[in-house]
Length: 257
Ligand SMILES: [Zn+2]
Image (cartoon, rainbow, N blue to C red; front, side, top):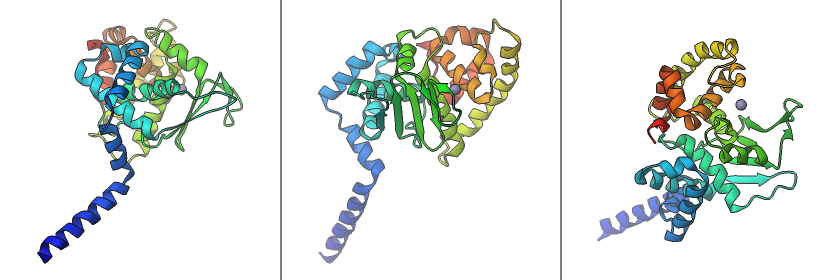
């Protein structure tokens, strides 16, 4: 009887401490998505995310589970009078989940704050007007006008949300100790190919990727991701080696959707 009581106290102690773990709370909240919530998110993403609409049922469930989980804890704040509605939150988190759907550690853990301006904003770092910015301290900054444009046309390889989330993913891989299946090595394989292709972007004005990709490795990576999701078939046909490395890195293949 005494052993039983001791075991009970230990179990209670362990459960109490686990319940205080933020990750566990988030996982539990994510698990318990109500039918209504699931329906609401499914309707929203079917309407606004062609990527989601094309996913097989199993991947749709994963997408919804992940968006629901992240929505519980992300901080999204409006700037210059911008009002953050539930739809705004769903858009931003949808962009994060689209990029990281194939990855095991998917929440871009450093990036828990997103600031949204109605339009382009003056960057305190460069003194210039920007549409998006990623601060390595864990903040993503977006112009809402440009973000929406990205999802209005999902075949022009211009998507601010995916672009900025790609910067966030690169920084996450660089700074995180949790290596999702050698993700750092997979990123390096992409960057090695990117360095060769970047010169072709600079030399060839008719390159599949827009000129901005020639700027540096980080911008090349972000523009590659925009093409990966919005022009997957052209990308795969024109730059098969780079496309293949991105499939391996992100563990998903939009050309098959
Ligand atoms: Zn960029």
